[in-house]
Length: 494
Image (cartoon, rainbow, N blue to C red; front, top):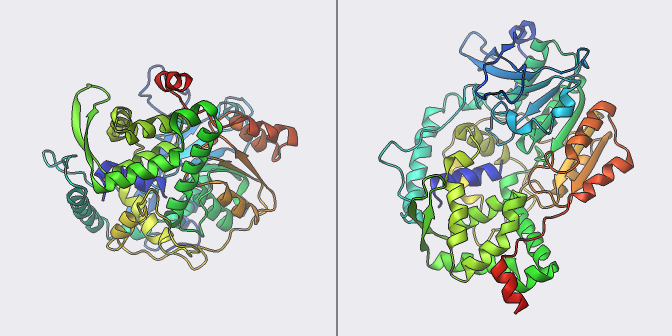
């Protein structure tokens, strides 16, 4: 029972196969041409773009086709290595091409000697994105509506979306994406590739490891989302773990402990109070500064807290934010909500593709534990309500089998990650004979852009191993000290 945009954030934070590429895909070539840049000057020079037409349903290649779009940054070296690195986005439903500019720094050194290839997975970005229509102009949900009203309207919107894509959804699960990935590799003429993926992207990599190991030289997986677990089922537990770690960090820091106390307890108390009595707060627009009245209820608070736990800087502000809100001052919390409700700040996720994966792959995964609420809210409940009417798709019998592989693999986990924490990486590591699992204690959801991680990835792709000395630099990625306001600090001193 959450606002439409917060519903999208909640979905983001969670996450019939064919045996191989079709003959037409095997024989196809993919011609890349120089791209026009929106930026001036361009973020990356020499970019090339193109698309590969593939059957939507490989079992009926004469029927409709979809264009799988590709962006390549050619290696800077005049004599590059023959094995590029392919980039797989998360979500599920995120465009790899759209996040390319955010990865320029992380892959700068890799690009010196290797092509970097971004592929929009089918159903995302430019590759026939499966999106749901938003409310018609003039019919947007008033943010002051009670949760039950906005929730009912959102369900109706998603019912229409499910009907729109009912005949297509069956061909947009992970296995089809893996088949497309292999087809692109062949069409570009690479004998072997390296793969990098984050969050849901690691699931794509694990499935590719299972089906096309001969095509892989090495893989890097950041924030493991194994195929054989249902992430939404563990979402509450993992978010609670991250919040508790943040609270422990504050209690271990004398100034924070005196200023804010037990952050986890304050969050629980605030959520319980808002469940009984939502409050109206004035949320300023991040650009115009004009305020909008918003009803802050328990579900919105839970989404805000969980969203903040994904990011190191936002998490650092939570002790201050929650302490003020628990005392009745919602000004800082309103600023955080303004950032969240600004559509420009949210990842561009193909909602229907996202739901197709969650409602068919995660929903059918083996469940080993009862779901745990987060701040009194069962996070998987709104997802399950949609899955009850979402198009049903068959997944292969071996889809949930544990992936075993001898391909060199580097696994990265953030010690403060609220959705793909280190235990999932440890679970995958047990079955990969040539893998390393490195944990950055202070990283949240996504390690690649933190500290020395990009250098380690570059070294690993080059050497297929890492020295003990190199690995130790990950320990330097420690949690950021919680923010303590000057006023709170002065109060402590007094």
